[in-house]
Length: 347
Image 1 (cartoon, rainbow, N blue to C red):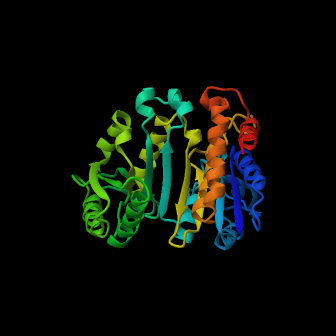
Image 2 (cartoon, rainbow, N blue to C red; image 1 turned 45 degrees about the vertical axis):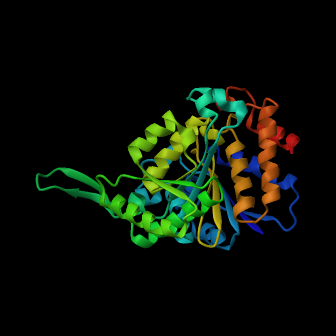
């Protein structure tokens, strides 16, 4: 079982190193690692955020454990050379279309949420986000209007096959949880969303045991704050899912706690925390590694078929929090290494 380690930029190397410590502690037979350059680190080394060698490693690997990309030094580069293109390129070349972002409040962190503790305590949801289409991959560019004005454009589009594929992923996830799927769109004003809604309804015929509902994205954002406990699984497009999953992170207490998996049809996956590279705290030991450690647990569950080991990691994170482990983003003062130490002690 080959794991590609793509640490990336900023705090990426620090948090990936701690997740690897936890994986090593499990002593899983046959688990091997290879490292690759991505993002700003890759651009500075070889002139491209996703070098051919890195992409080749990604294709060979059973799963990818990813840190973060983003470097202020690269902000002035042409868009195709910016660090963020590494993650978009991996999604495109590996067919990574189904992004799973669980959001659940650990009881010990209910007071850290921006919501009232009794509201936050009810959060236990999964956002299934399509990640291979939408405005991020549509036609884009700049043009000049008839009035001589500079205009930017990004085309939002989905075809039926793309929506059908992610809809099946959403229904299957809901079937494995509490049997409720909420499809989020903006069908009242967007033709793309109308196609999305029509297709999701058609797919629902295959899942009579799952209760399907629909919600406009603006209402969904409000409901995540007002009554997040109503949601089980949310399925939505790339842009809406990006926004809603970041919102959900603050509802559970910190963006440093949310893991994610992005899978292709063969369950090869890229696993990463949903936060960014945080260059302002890189090298200071303040980064919270728990989201990356929890991403490693998702990797064991979804791509490597090792659910018992995944359960052990998740239980160890819960145990560390019960024992008082707190990094700066959780109101504490423990370093990145000390947080991982607490997980290892609970393991």
